[in-house]
Image 1 (cartoon, chains in turn yellow, purple):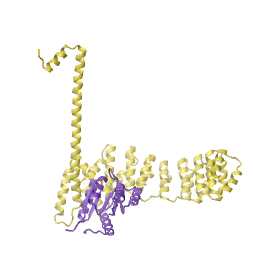
Image 2 (cartoon, rainbow over the protein chains, first blue to last red):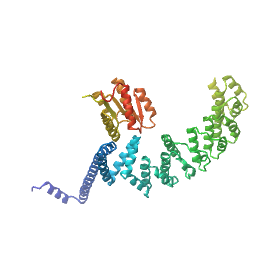
Image 3 (cartoon, one colour):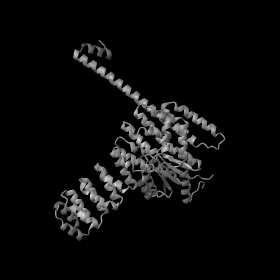
Image 4 (spheres, each protein chain N blue to C red):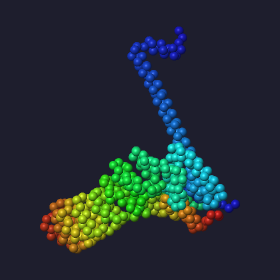
Amino acid sequence: MNLTPFEWIVELYHESPLKVKYLLGSIVVLLFLCLLTLTVLVSLRMKLYNRRNKTSFLRAKYEELLITLLYLDEEDFDYQVQKDEIVNELKIAIKSKAERNIIKDLLIGLLRDISGDMATQIQELFHELGLVKYSLKKLKSRKWYIKIQGIRELTEMQERSIQGYVFGLVNHNNTLLRSEAQLTMVRLFEYGGLGFLIDLKYPVSEWQQLQLMASIQNNVEFVLPQIKDLLKSKNITVIQFSLKLVQFFNHIIEPEEIKRLIKHRDPQIRKQTIDIIGEMGLFDMKPYLKESYVALTKEGKLSVINTLAQLGSEEDVTFLTASSEDVDFKISLQAMLALKDLLTQEEFKKEMGSLHVKNERALEFVMDQVC
Amino acid sequence: MKNKIKVLLVEDDTTLSLLLKFRLQKEGYLPLVAHDGKQAIEIIENDQPDLILSDIMLPFISGLEVISHVRNELKLPMPILIFSAAGQEEMVLKAFDLGANDFMAKPFSPNELMIRVKRILQTSGQSVLN
């Protein structure tokens, strides 16, 4: 009997034991699922490919329209007609979310690279096209990440009208939103941009401090505000950050303020203040450093010795010699190294010979370097 | 017909590149555009532009490598003006070491760029119309 291949498979299936029937059934189902998955993946891929193509096409189209618009000559007789034509076309495009995002990204990207009259023109265009309304609308969103998007767009466009709104977010309980608001304050408002620090309730993380510092460095118009109030903040991280600003801007602090900060309960603030004395060459503060030395922690003592190594003179030899007798290896070693830099080889050997308590390991190490 | 001055513009950002191309055309130059270092070197070797305006950070071959190729391999004397983003001071110094003639930090004003282009071309003995 002649059977077609399909009939042969069907007959084979019917004659098979139950277990084989299950197995074959499973294979068919699996094959079907594989085919289905493949079809879905291919269609998704095609969709993505088409979307990317469409985006590139639209990007190129709007790029050209925007550049043409920016270069229209006001003295041309049909300037207004040409301008209205392009602006209307862009306004229609902006109604679609995808196209709005393309146009907005093009303008923001351009503003990052361009300054001067053309930058002003781009900012005006952002308003004229109504894009500013969409960004402002994002600020009203309940979702924090949409708010951040809105803040970023308006910051890029140098939209200073958002100062009040952003200031209200610097103490927000969402860390990311709070950080973005603080960065915007520094990026947009050169005068009083750091004013938010005075009432800051939350700690400023090390990373955030670095970002704020980078933003300050990039903002050429930034003016350092009165730092005196910031140094009195109850927020320890605000004082730490303010001391970094003092170091960066070589800002002068009053001696009384320095004395107060050397006694601060936070060890990092104490250390930063002592380091500033050395870096800024505040020689007048040396006697006070020596007075406070005993009450300081090990880290604080090491900072004082480092500072004296920077600002040291003959009058500090007695103090450093006494510190060389410290039972702590690190302090003793640091003091000896400071003395080594301060004295001649002979004077140093003589001074080391006069030590009552000798930290042998430290002494051996330093003498090896001297001889 | 008088020959226009050929200015090679090497910039990977298509929008900025288009904007500067328009401006160069408006000022009477003949802009040649490359979007990466590879294209730039091809254009330099084939068309020998009178001036190169190049970004430092470029795909495939960086702006620094383009300068090095022009000065050390091709031994060409045309002036080179580079663009750099803020915080790329070291790169700018390297670019000068390699033979760049001038630089502008982003964001820059296209008007100022055109003034520099004119000045740099005058110094090298060229003007808008040869």
